[in-house]
Length: 252
Image (spheres, rainbow, N blue to C red):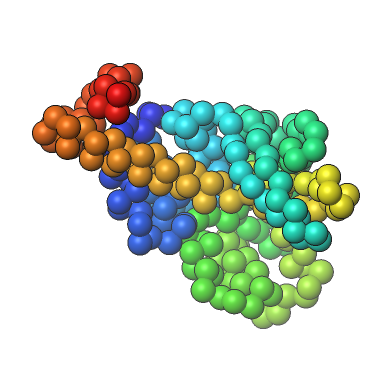
């Protein structure tokens, strides 16, 4: 996996401005895994995609994930910081004190390569970005779940109806087979004592990093271009330490 350069980051941010979050995730992976076809990335199970996006964050932006969340009971804002590599350890639970989330995945780890499950005689592969995109506009949760399962079904048997308990069992089995498909954080509010869970959207988290870096880079380009008359590509090819030093001299 390659590291995002300054030019990469600006191009990625600009291309992703009007894209759906699902497409942004694939665009980000394509930038750091240029040898992997885009269509192949779209077919990766969600857990594999989330693992790769988390690794991308570690490589290009560092291991620390920092954010804010509001307590749903009292509205208190909690700032948290966590190590992204905790999410890459499927057996880990991290709880380092007030404001720091406990991280858990939605299932137990299974052998690498287990990408098909069988429930009540029906076979399903693990959901991918492409599958989720197919049901993204369905607003009724139960219908969306059925559409997702039908999209992932690999056997040729016929099925006209799904019972709620069957949908739940299949969903739990898929989650257990792909633990990083959904990353749940458990928070404790120091103000009111409330404990709750929330999902971590690694695509959204990563995109905030990309956007913040892009805006910072554009400000640096503006400052140095105004001071020295350099072109954008000349400024972006400077190493970060040299660019920082030039900025310090301009601002001095």
